Amino acid sequence: MLQKTQDQRQLAGSYWEASRPALRTDRQLMGNALFDVAVIGAGFAGLSAAMKLAAAGVSVCVLEAEHVGYGASGRNGGFCCLGGTKLSVHQLVRRFGLEEARKFLAYQVAGINQVAQRLETWGIDADCHSKGEITLAHRPKDLDGLRAEAAYLKENFGIKSQVLDKAALDEEGYGGPGFHGGLHIPYGFALNPMAYLYGLADQVRRKGGRIYGKSPVNGMSRDGDRWRLDTEHGFVRAKGVVLAGNGYAKETVPKWMHGRTLPVMSSIHVTRQMSEDELSAQGWTSETMASDSRILLHYFRLMPDRRFLFGTRGGIFETEPSLKAMHKRARQDFESMFPAWENVESEYQWYGRVCLSRNLTPFVGEIPGMDGVYAAMGWHGSGIAMASLSGEKAAGLILGTVRPEDLPAALQQPFKRFPLPSLRKLYLQGAYWWYGYQDR
Ligand SMILES: Cc1cc2nc3c(=O)[nH]c(=O)nc-3n(C[C@H](O)[C@H](O)[C@H](O)COP(=O)(O)OP(=O)(O)OC[C@H]3O[C@@H](n4cnc5c(N)ncnc54)[C@H](O)[C@@H]3O)c2cc1C
Image (cartoon, rainbow, N blue to C red; front, side, top):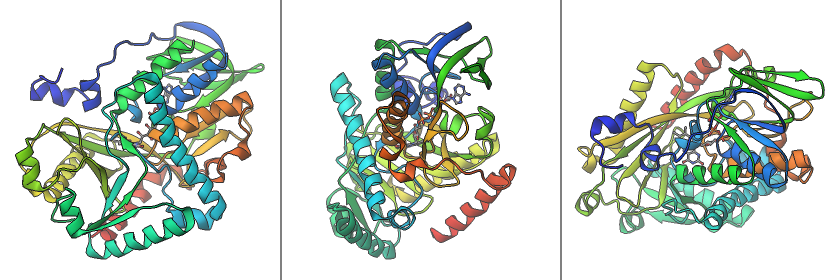
């Protein structure tokens, strides 16, 4: 599979899709069907919810607009790490109090552990590597900030992180002229997300859950004591519904969703394989997952097959010119941050949608006024661990094995609507310019 020509590779979608082709496609919903629960979206959240429900003997289907992994779960950077919110730990403490912030952090760690446990139990080789992750200071003054962060995390959360100065970075193989130090956090690992996702879909099917591909839900309405979900060639009637469309959710399914989330783009390049000499020329030999200290951050890692994955945040509009500009900017950033690799081609490039909310936190819970309809979404660009655990928690809410108050308070708040929703991308554009200025 990896012997493709350059042209074929550009067309192949993500590197994950090319390196782990799907073994099966799920058939479309044709006609009408009755289930206890219908899940919208076959990503980490929807499949985790469906797996948990199916395992409990609930009849469940997943309605997916395209195919397993079409959304961000098949397009991400494979950093299974802390995250899920745009709030810093300081902001979390201010908004929810220290105890709740601790609970939320413990939840994130539990999410990471759950993914690791699943891979082990299911015997999936997902090319895992990296013990924890490192944030690299892109300005000398940011190293002071990372030091303060390390002290704060230790004092308030008991996290034993490690601060590295420039000399330590060079010694440990994080070579780059633009890095002035780093903060290593001992949680998380990297993986091939598609290998994990296909394993998860397989578990749903084995446990008796039904996945329908090419079945976008175009409308949702009340039908007696059930919800009716309409697709192009049929409909499903179900008592419970889990909304797990995240950045790919339709604004009107259900109507409550209108103006409550904001999908933005993140793009990824994966280079060709590099020789050990090429890696040494840049001084980058570490396989630890890394990101820089910018607000509009870059994330990157050397993969076990010696390709370098480089991702950027910050794309807002999904038009062809802006996507082209986003990829071009990403490539320029890569070359300026890793100048020794300026001639190392990107063999794969793709993008996907991450889901922001006005609250800046995810929402896992029942939609107000919609009996039996639950949401699990809004992971703010870090959803491998968070969506996996939260999908399962949403299923637990339906089963009655989880109470809303068992979840961290940060997850319990339904999404607020953005003011002037039709302009939300424009004012985010303004915020991004400001962030770009602050990042200099
Ligand atoms: C480029 C990129 C890099 C990322 N890197 C990382 C990373 O390194 N680490 C990390 O933790 N997170 C990362 N993320 C975020 C992470 O991938 C997502 O948060 C996570 O995959 C979301 O999973 P999900 O199941 O909630 O949604 P998704 O995987 O997006 O799945 C939603 C699915 O719902 C379907 N859908 C939506 N509406 C409908 C409808 N009406 N009818 C039927 N189907 C519907 C879509 O087709 C889609 O398949 C990244 C995201 C992107 C885009």
